[in-house]
Length: 325
Ligand code: ADP
Ligand code: MG
Image (cartoon, rainbow, N blue to C red; front, side):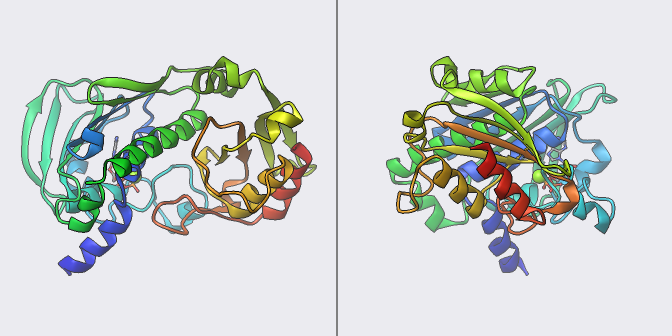
């Protein structure tokens, strides 16, 4: 029913930062090497994500924003070894339910781009030729127009600023996961954060954290004997710095994730007790762990946000994290 659709959409499009995350994942899945995120009035007026990826074919545009449409899974088996950020086919359809959506796109085979206006069901209500280059630009305006409680949540300017910080933090994680991609975030026409295309994770770390922070980090690479788990990490050099480590980025197969036991192990090893405030967002990140696992040992389909994971090799991962730190 209409109501059940709104209920599930509201769980995908939970916040401004989460909508930006979904659009950024789509851009990365499309093979973009450059992604520009622009927000107007903290994203409440407008969220725009522009990429130079493969674009969306005209035939596919009919389905792209339909509920549960995804081009990323061919069979059930694909779900067991995911290579893309997206697979649930919910982001665009959810955005259409709770906001006004316009998608401008051009594939390498199209002579010009087309701007599509979508209705709340994700169907095309209007299309016209446009002038943009190859890639896709998604514009979301009037977000949460039919979710009054969520809309009023942002009436509080502290909450709006918090969302901007969360958006920046989320983009930093994706920037670290994708060193070769150029990423930028603007707010009301001012660029507030950006990362150029980099050759290595190490170069990306310097660019994202600045040289002052990154010179206090050391690069480490470890593997288990079976070579099923590999970790590429940047961790604080000195004990004193370890004690101030208040922000860790954990990536599993390039996906920024939250895993309680891994976080706990990192905190324990870096000298932060359990009692201390979790999810501390203040300050700069001082530890980065990029973990590589066989794709068929990772299950990210635990919640619609895809930030929680279940791992077959969790014990091995935890052991390796302890060794590393
Ligand atoms: P999912 O990412 O889970 O497949 P989405 O609702 O996020 O679901 O997107 C639906 C489909 O629209 C994608 O599978 C993809 O084919 C297409 N799509 C969305 N965004 C882009 C983009 N930026 N570039 C190219 N294709 C896109
Ligand atoms: Mg997606």
